[in-house]
Length: 411
Image (cartoon, rainbow, N blue to C red):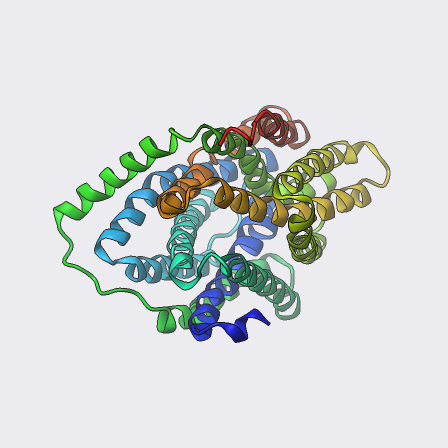
């Protein structure tokens, strides 16, 4: 295995454990369990619950898109990266645990706790990701990133299995799962805090803040000079928003439109995590065989098709079975789409600009990610979740069309 060849094996494994630690928050609270619980139990009705939940996702996206480049540049300049990483991890874990307390009718209490936890989760992930360039070189960054990604899937799966084993899936049990998520995050992030090295902190000054803003402006001016990269980032804005929306609201749609039970949604979460791991492995291999652009294209076509399947599922007797097929296909494609997008960005970016351009890549992944969820919530409130699914379909379609209009020979 490639890990045995690494001189910094202990540090790489410790860093990878952060994905193992934080994945249950994304899998259980955001995607499959708590979101569905919020809309079906805590909120007065599913339409209102969906609107409020999507507003919470949108608020998170807006705040993170504003704060992450500023804090990221500040951390780079002043050496406060690990301080921010530990702080946001603890905030996310503590507020995840506090989600045990809201009960039916405690809508704004629950939503406030979730938004704070979700903002902290996203910002913690930004700072964790920034260590990759310190731990890896050009030859092994993909392998290290893939190992960490895979370990995250394992963490999400194990946490789901533990939730099945330890908790009754009634109101009290589902609220108790939030405690498991928070404690899991606190325990398994410890190796990252202890063994991943960081440079010494400088004394924080006004100049660090000014430099952080200057760094963002400089990066934007540089990126716009590369037309192919800009066109790719614009296309990715759309299809990445589609992914964010479907993963934020998949469990909610399953319960609200297709009458899934909480245990069925948890089982769906397990299967989707497994299919995502399989998809990442298979298409990671195929990427070298057929090309990164072809894999992104294939993933987008399948994502459009599978979301259409989810839309038509309620019209059939076997609606749950059709949705299962759609869910597995989405799971298979999410890993390849994200990993190949990162690979393509690496291929397009000049070597001397990789650090600053990848920071901008992360920013554009968050910049408009509020749009899909908030549109989904508004359309659900006025029509239905099924009609709102067209938001996801159109985001994937626009992304696919824009991606295929790019002439990758320009640069």
